[in-house]
Image (cartoon, rainbow, N blue to C red):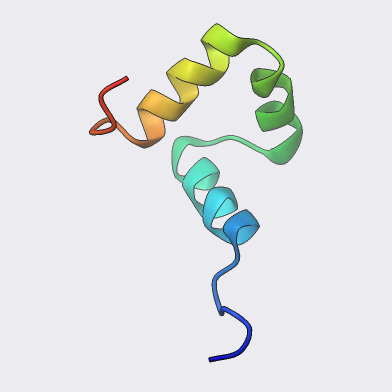
Length: 49
């Protein structure tokens, strides 16, 4: 119990690092819905959007 060792932000940062994105680039992509959707599909190809 207690505080989780892996936070959501750290897990997202690790995923973004695998595809070569930084936080500022991620924030920029999140402003454009179509671009963000492509990013999410690249991270989670089995989600089936």
